[in-house]
Structure formats: structure tokens, C-alpha cells
Length: 262
Image 1 (cartoon, helix red, strand yellow):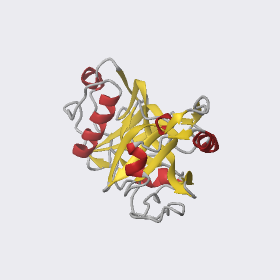
Image 2: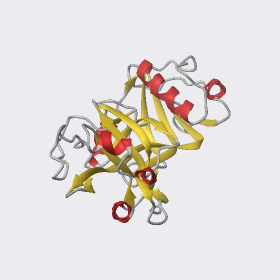
Image 3: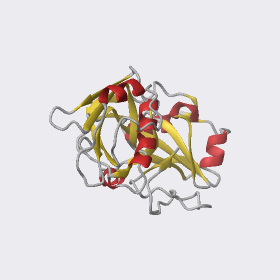
Image 4: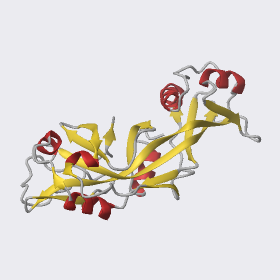
């Protein structure tokens, strides 16, 4: 559900310290490397790829923690055309095949809600110790381009995940819309279970077999006194100045948007 742009759910996630994954993915996990150059974000690899002589096992990832504060958060009410694109992407990421088909409803707006959110995380201090004790690959092109060049490099430390979300379908007058659940289930495929709320038939729950990472926290990799250093990253404040003095920790400047990871 992290694909909303300028949406109240993004504001809520930022308030909880999270950035948004624009295209939720089952493979999005802690210790991923994210690079930014010229306004574009890319997944570049994993933490161990910065090290030539690992000091030991990678930091432990804790999984399945309760996503307190995130479950129950709702999106803004979206035009059906926009919502259908988001819904199709989510269903597709969970193994379904809905696309932008809306023949099963007479709705004009839909609203998404985060449900049963869990957290996967790694302790940032453990990440720092791993980098400190290992032999950094000085010739690594990722370091050259995204840390020593005009780019920014982030390490994911926490990921919010879910395989379940709820959608409310409404007509223009804010009344509940008709939803043909059997037709919707057939479109979504057997990989995603579709069910209607017992009291409000226009409220539909989707459950997939795959959990998707849709929001995250991260630390930024910089250089201090000739060695790699980590700087905490606050949601909505992640842009390092281009051409920064690398003898100092990379500065953090507040832009107007969250990390737009594509």
C-alpha cells in the first residue's frame, strides 16, 4: 500500500519514522542497499557486498514483530481509476492477476487500509559494527558512485510488511458500492483470497500468500575521517547535498517528499 503519492497514509507513515516503497515487494528486506543519483532511487544489492573480508556472520534480522501504529492506517479516498492501478499492482505483487479491471463494482472511489502489519528489523549498531570490523571494498563501484561521488547510499534497517489489506468501495455520494465478490475472486486468482465484511459488503479484504514490504527505515552511509560512517535518516529528511565535503559526516537536508523507491 506504499504506492500512494501525497496521501494521508504517507503522512502517517512519516510521523512514525517510515519512508515509503512505491512498488511493494516481497523481496524488500533489511540490509538492502538503496542508492540515489539524479533524483532516482535504485536497489543496489546487500550490505555484505560492501565488504571484501567479512568479520563474521551478517547482523541478525528479527522478523514478525507487531507493527504497532501502522495497522489500521488508511489512505485518502482515491478516484477509482487511480485506485484500480494501485490495487492491480498490489494483487500482482502477491501473485494475483487483477490488473485494472473494475467490472465487478459500481464504485467511484476506494480507500485502502493497512492490516496485520509486521516488522522485520536489524539493529543499526550491529550494522555499524559489521562495517567497522570488516574490510571495506575500496574499489566497489557502489561506494565510488554513491558515497564518494555525487550520490547517496542508504542501508535499510527496518521494513513494514503485510499480506493483508482492506479496501472500501464507495459511490460518489459516499454510500457503499456494490461489489461482486465471486467475480472479483475469479479476477484476482486463487493466490489471493477475497472476502467481504459480514456487516458492510462494500468493505473487501484481500489476503495473499506473499507478504509485501511497503515501508521502511534506513541509515545513510557516509565518510568520516576517511572511514565509512552511518547517519540516522528521518522520514522526509534524506537528501544529502551534492558535492558535500567528505571530511565531514554527510549533511541531511529536508526535502518535501519521502524516499521515492521505484
